[in-house]
Image 1 (cartoon, helix red, strand yellow):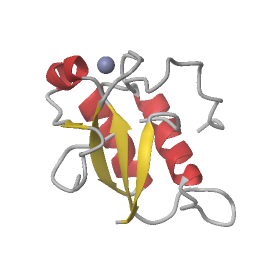
Image 2 (spheres, helix red, strand yellow; image 1 turned 120 degrees about the vertical axis):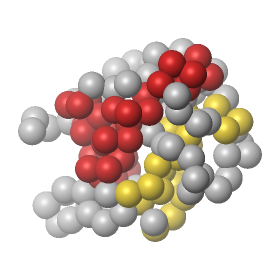
Image 3 (cartoon, protein in one colour; image 1 turned 135 degrees about the horizontal axis):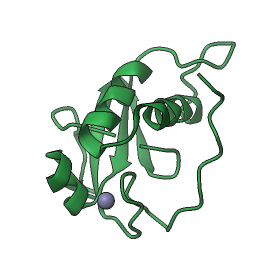
Image 4 (cartoon, helix red, strand yellow; image 1 turned 30 degrees about the vertical axis):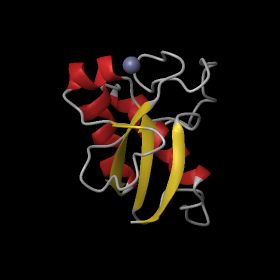
Length: 121
Ligand SMILES: [Zn+2]
């Protein structure tokens, strides 16, 4: 796996899937970096390599990494996903900032779309 690339320039509060700006809905994902990556593919239609990069970047941003910088443990993270993409991928999204308890929603995306750290999984 290659080193994650810097995130592309995206509109403010962009949807992780289509990059539409000012996205006010999001979904949450819970699990290891591998599961988060799979969730991003499933819920936001993100290609596998990019999904893996996003999951790794998220864990690094949240500080859940080993001494060598690889993802460690389980996290709960939220990703902005617009309603159009949620419908397309049959993902469940909530309106921000009331997403709140995301445990029962399908999550996912890249550093800039991460809304908040939901704590240790
Ligand atoms: Zn979208």
